Image (tube, rainbow over all chains, first blue to last red; front, side, top):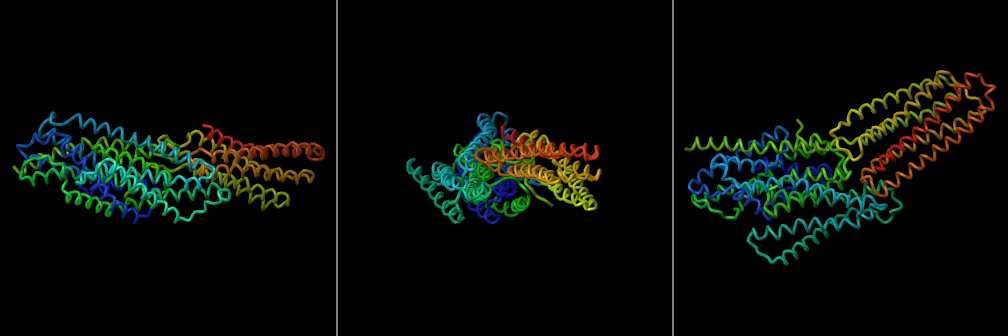
Length: 404
Length: 226
């Protein structure tokens, strides 16, 4: 299951980064491994809860826990089947959509339409509509700010060096603030709000420091802005953005780990919780770490085996995505996903990223966007919900037939 | 087997590079006129014919590029600039190639002889016209940077300055045209009448070449104004 996530989802999430060729394949893999784990462990709690308890009331099944186990197994199997099928067909489906669709399908078929917490579901649905839009607006604004402060000026290189720290700081802040506010307490550490914020700011400064160091290492000649043509200055500025990109890639994978991995292992956690409590359905918010670990390992292995080929092919493709564009799109998407995670809403990282890319396109940043492809992508997301639901219902009845 | 995430297909082929390739071919047509006119002045018609064929060949290639670009601008493509503007620019560029081919064709077809009284000035005139085409090419090659800067800021003013420069070059050709016509008028009685007619025509066409180069700049200016 999580293997499919790694193969399809994580590769999608890395697409802008790889498309801009800001980082090498090896760097991408290292980032993916570290931050996928970090995201899932540090910030993933809330979403799993929504998946496990938010969509329908599991207590309705307290008399027949085995039904819940079959159901969750069916959800997992349906998710895997659909993900594999989609990967094979080349559809960029999102694991989030699949899982939610599957769970709804299970709840409706096993208990009834009323069992589904439709308020929660409509909230999730609304967030699916709004998350790409928010990401698009954010990306649009971010790109305009890059244009205004750096690329549109007479001395883009000088300004890039001057303003890069601010962007770095923002990346660090967005990532760390959600982690310390939400994630740490999930791990059992409770911090006062002010100390959380202090830690977040420290992390942001750390990001700033490391980033500045890396930019210094580029040894750019910024001293003679008149000497260089705009053309060479643009090239040099893009190299700075490539460094920034390194950090936003981390943020994006982190966000992906925090939301999507948590979604994928949600049903698994439900099953384990029933098994651990000897057949009783207990609402506990603790996610066994080994499940998360397993989930992450699956994602990473899937990414290494399959997603790697994806990014390798992309390396050869000609895209018009420069690091500055990729930076704006990725940061916007990462921020949106991380924010959604904090509020416990399961959004799709892929979907958000597509929204963000559109946002940069609207700011006249990208040479050409294929609207037909984008429409197809959105269509495949809509199909995913009923497909996941239907597959789950089939598997669920199959299990009941086999084991009863 | 190619495994690509469909996400990557979001990024369509940018039309800017094909546009520049077309401009490159177009300019090559115009530039070849300078070598061609040297061959004509040297009365070397074998060489001139070869060059004329080369120009016609380049013009064909440019036509092909133009067709390709038009075919690869489907409606579903979301571009940072209006599609109509791109199509206008490529049409304007194409006219430069067409005119270059016509000029070479007419001179070769009639084996035109330029009277010594106007020959040096005519060459300078042609050089100026080709310079206008070169400036148009350089403007088109700034499109990369324009996209990089998101069509805003100081890169725009840089390109606008280049377009002003282009207008200036075109204006110079206008001035030379007036002088060269006056000079031709003085000696036209000594030239066979039909030859004189066609000399006037060629002078007109060389002026058109610069006009069309200017039009490329004008179209780009329009694009920037939106």
